[in-house]
Image (cartoon, rainbow, N blue to C red; front, side, top):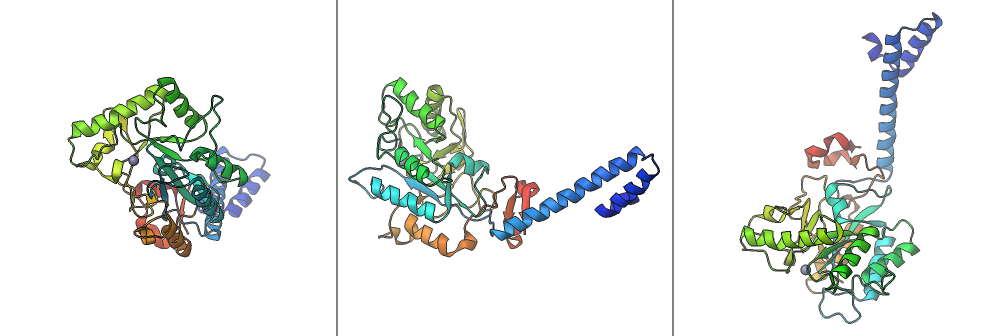
Length: 342
Ligand SMILES: [Zn+2]
């Protein structure tokens, strides 16, 4: 029993003495290995803490989830971005050390980005052809959202070309079943994430549970039949939750880990008590004009840049949730095993 409380060096000395007798008892070997393993684990934890502190890791910080619609040359509404604007949006994210993750990765806590980088979730609603149009070889058409994202990522290694596309029955303008299947499978094969945006894009507020389940369940079944994909998140049309928010999360044909809204703030980290999987805020992508002076992407990215203590910063280690010790009360209990306060 006494060996257990010895320090690593003490154990080594004791083991050496025993070895000198020429007959090291098996029990000593076991204790030695256990003590060494414990010492190693302690040293490795200390190194992890040091690495996390060095980059000021903050995995309880906020994550911008950006909401895009169409990417078109002549915007019809403030929801649309031109290809040029979209390129600039992405270049800014590169410059400010953001790395895209998908909505599925965010809600499941699989935020695998390098130390010191910040996650950003790029979401595209309404499955428009301006987001994805492929030629007969499966090459995306120039100036579509996926083409631009891939171009920017190719120019900046480390910037992952991933996004979540929220699909309705308007499947990227395709009406032929085989073409719909090609589009969804291309997205899956290229690392993109497919989300549910309901079949008919109706406002779910005030509808019966049956109607809500039908709107979400039928498109979920269709997506699955076309591509074997089961979306793990939903973007609620107009950002409106049904009467019971859980109806959007679970139904006969769907089980979501996250439901996304339409406004107006960065989202809490999935490891934070502030995270509500049934109502995750997103940010409209737009310059600081009108209502967007405060509540859209340009304003929030400025704010996150000047408030780094509020922003999610990775420690580069997916097996830990690292954060300044001061934030401990905000850790969700279910992540306690992985916690790395410093
Ligand atoms: Zn929509």
